[in-house]
Length: 192
Ligand code: NI
Image (tube, rainbow, N blue to C red; front, side, top):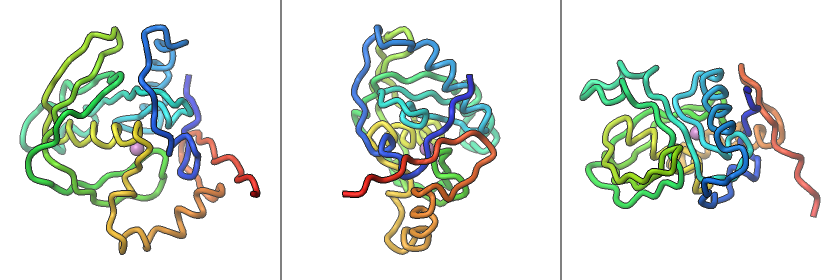
């Protein structure tokens, strides 16, 4: 089932997610729906808060951009579910790559991140792994991992770059947004 994607301004995107256990209700369906929602929006990764669930899970499929990776071919098989991930180390030189986000339609910009991560995570069967990722797979994980921490890629931009998109983001947060996939506009802010 294709789920509506939450948009910048939705509080769920700013909430740090909690670990989940194997008895998390509807987990298999949530994972299947996240893949379907991601493919429908031509994404290469999606995190649970982007479908309105504050749970520590994201899915990736880097195969659509496999030709962008000049260094190696690790994206060719990079389709994975990550549950309860924890970045143990970030290493290597920072490098820039243009990122976008299904929850921030219409905005893309270069983000600088370390080249390598050591990640502890569980798969969909709750088998635990500790693995080193680098290059684009690391990049995709870092972006999705941020979602689980309530962080968006625009948070990483310089103050100047942020000032350029400030109005657009403010508009998005009050529903001035469109995308070529189903979205859920942020709930109206309560007056205090
Ligand atoms: Ni994103």
